[in-house]
Length: 216
Image (tube, rainbow, N blue to C red):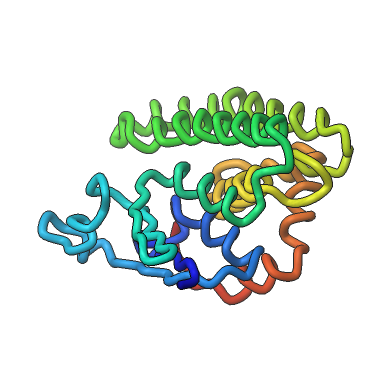
């Protein structure tokens, strides 16, 4: 029996989009299971099915054996390895892991803004200023260091082809820009080159052009 993938998440890009983009790039068929906010309640069948009561989760079947995988990064990394998007060497994998670690750092400071002092406009503006002038530039600067350290000098993080690391940053740059939070591509030429390299891939471009438009 051929292996199958069922990716389950809210009806949005969010934390499932990196995995969807990988499937698109490699033309890997998968079931795109989505639910609405209203369907994600205490008695939700999806919540009960999820390994940790959270989305996204992946249901992977191979040779009659089915496994559920939770946590967005575990899913993205598993799919990356399955589809050959995790580099060619252990050193490549280490670079990719560093990119994902920095991505997590950035998301953590971004989520802090969204959750702290939501009713304090002055505090929110102060935090936004710090994000745009200090936190985001610092982390994107670290991404640039890793791009420039690639011996292939290809504009990608590893080798001379797209990896899951490039897809992570491609999706991040898009998300930050459409939410008018930070335009990394306009501030860092290396990030723009990486973004354009991924965006111009015919399979990625076709997917992005036809994907469902959602707020996040």
